[in-house]
Image 1 (spheres, rainbow, N blue to C red):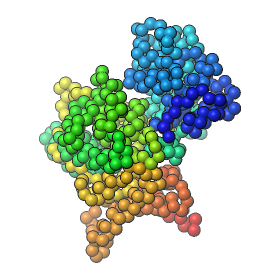
Image 2: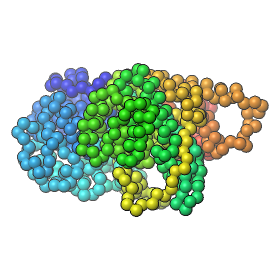
Image 3: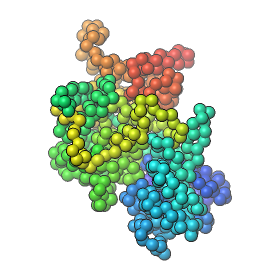
Length: 582
């Protein structure tokens, strides 16, 4: 069901709203629609659910009631200003996206303006004056950006403290720092830690069940990496096997290096997946999320070599970036390569295949990036995201359905690897710093299909690129209901395991001595996922819920990051559940 922008309707009869949007309006105005509504309201909805539609419906209602006469939309980027203005125009709200601090009074033809958080931070007193002179509704798009440093938070608070109404929106409300977000309420839990409180929440899990968003299939690729250090030593490591943090970081960087074959092989696999999806979704598009300008251009050359077609390149400092994004959205071109510009809020509903080719690993950025692929246009569409087999990313993928709140009073990490410091280190540069010496040089990088992550479970076994085993997963039909995706993945994994058993001779434990630690863990993951699948059939609980309950009972991280002992503990626990049920 596509997003709708309803005309004025009697209360409770706006059938073109999605159910969650109507429920959120009832949370604001009361079930009878007669309440005046709160001054501050935080709505958290998964990317692709239709937060813009809800916000504009609320704005229209408040204007009809004369509770406000003006609207200010505050966005993270310039592109989103224009996107909001276009959406608002379709419901009769005229927003000026070109207004700047130096523009003077807002034109009489407009109901308000769209500005960026940076624009507000530059002259908060100017925006306060604008807000004081007219009864204003302020809409904070992706409100967590208001906590980007104390100066930004203070500026937003100063500028919009006099607002008649404030609506805060977020698809990813959590932040990696502990700066409080203005106009967001925090509640102290039993553990003494304060967490943000949303007035209405609509997570990915419920949205998936309602058919509002697409299910996401994560295809993880491992591989052999070899690089030369600054001292001239050559190091070899296998991405996807247990490595130290430094080894993982360098192997990951080698994988993304355009000089190696890993990224070439993954991009080729992603394009084959896109071809399969376009059988059912003819205009399906793909997006490669790159780290910097140089690699983005290199990836675009790879795509031309693979597809015979050019890819749209969107760079953060390109003044024509917004125009390029809109043109790509309106065509049926296959691929876009982007740096930063398409990580949050940008609406390209036809994106269905992604390649996560960036070293940024924070939960916030990952959730924002995956949010570009989940918007559903009709039931049965699936999204596929290709990524390196790195424990951090595997954990994020496994926990996609978890809902997070912004946490204050967070204890300092003893290892010193605080999330905000990691985020700072991961800020993407357009070019290396002058005089900077590369920490290593990629010598060789090759890809191996590792596994598929879906609904909290893992499927598949190692396979070489281009093999029949890999093609079984790349060829999953593009139109499937979520339960059909699970059933098909289970079937294909069972067939793959049966093929492995058929090729063995003698004692199946005879090759035990030759197995690596990674293979041991992979076998334990398969055993655990088989038990979770069985428990899903027996109880009807979603697999993601079962995995989360096992984590609560046994402790430890997500399956992708868990040790062999932690996985064995969960296997024992679910067997205990089964015995108790019998």
